[in-house]
Amino acid sequence: MAVINRFITSAESLVTTHEETRAGFLSIALEKNRVGDPFVRNAVAFKAMVAHTENAESLLLIPQVRPFLITAAGLSEKSLAYLDEADQTMAIQELIDKFLKPAGAAYIDEATFRYLLIKGDAVVGTMRNKIGAMGQERLIRAVFANMSVRGMACDVIYTDSTRWNMVNTAGAGMEANVKALHWRNAAGDRTLVFNAKIPTVNRNVDISLFSSNTGEYDRGRIVRRDDRAIMFGELKGGIDPAGADEHWKTGNTALNRIRTSFSDAGYPTVKTSFIGAAIERSMAEEIYQQMESGILTNACNLTNSNQLTEYCNWLVEL
Image (cartoon, rainbow, N blue to C red; front, side, top):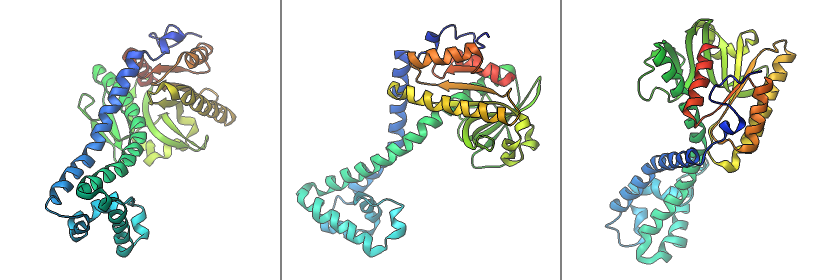
């Protein structure tokens, strides 16, 4: 069986290049700085607000900076639901006695550093989720670009809404927080759903395509309609080569489960696809072999614009 994507001529075509890996890491670094910037601004503001103080103890007398000190003391927002004002004051006092006082004249810097250290964990957690979101947003931008070139109309539901809205696919920033897309091609209405739990598989699936108009989407209940399922895909947006094989193993297991579950349910023709940002040689061989044999209907490297565009051509026309 021929490989559908014309920009994939061999397993080597799928491998993420050094330049693409480098660009991916730089993009993540830029995003990490953007996510962390509000915390840096908070630290700057704190230093200005307490610059007039003479010792660490006096920080407790400034109610405006109490939330900052609570964080510097190591208390998370979740923990505050279980701690009263006295408990919180005790934690701040511990911070002052054990860390700020020993720092001497540098007590303001010490409090600032400890706040940033605690918030660093928050940035790491946010970035874990953001890296996956960045991959999805890149795919959606590519889908929008494909539709814009074709002059196709597209409806979208955002994660914080239940209403369909027609969007200008050439507009900037339209790809953020998308829950589902709808369009119409030569074969009929199509709805693409992201990160939905598919009952037949009993797992969340990254990309799910159904034969469905906006009304039949029915607030996401379309995922229960096995007879409307067209394609399911796994999307791995992480760029770190060290985690590439594990991402493929996880994705491949999920795709096998999808194929088996739908075949057992009487729908063996459901298509599957894989999109990855970090694709190493060993996994590229396996992906290419699955594409040649027809086990995997389609795949592409997320960092390769030509492959991604060709994948979107296929997706939009399915």
